[in-house]
Image 1 (cartoon, helix red, strand yellow):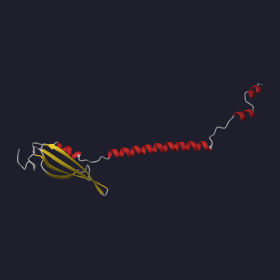
Image 2: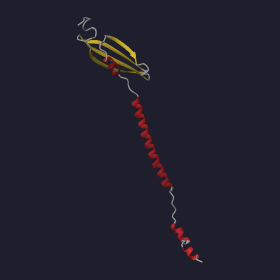
Image 3: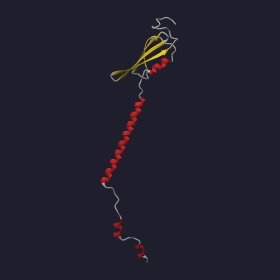
Image 4: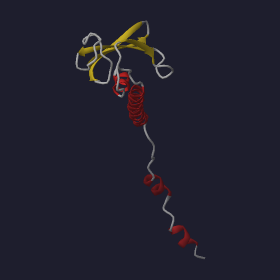
Amino acid sequence: MNLSRHTSRLPPRSAAKEGVARHAFTLIEVMIAVAIFFSCMFAILALVSTALRNARSLQAMDVDAGMIASQLAMTNRLFEGMTSDDFGDIYPDCRWDQDVGEASSNGLFQVDFLVTRRVGQRDVMTTMSILLYRPESPPGSMSKGLSR
């Protein structure tokens, strides 16, 4: 029989044990890998947190007097006096006041705006003044009520 030929293909027992190396991680290697992993995760978490905070700050619009000034600029006639209102449901904690006065007797009006916004326990105020030329407006205090 060819039994000797079959056994010659197998390495001797002592040679098989010497050639096999143990492949495993040491405790130090595992601890370093875990530390690197968590450092990366905390860095990514910080980036996501910063991005969310910046996105939230972009959504909170500040109310300014330009919103009211743009609506007033579309009118052709101005009347002297004070007007006051709020922004309704759009900005519930905000109010605005406008004071229209004739700046010159030729139809030039000065409009002063004041926007008051309630922030916590205090009011934050924003002011703005614009000049509008509206010759179709009725005469005001500068022209002493006389028509042009």
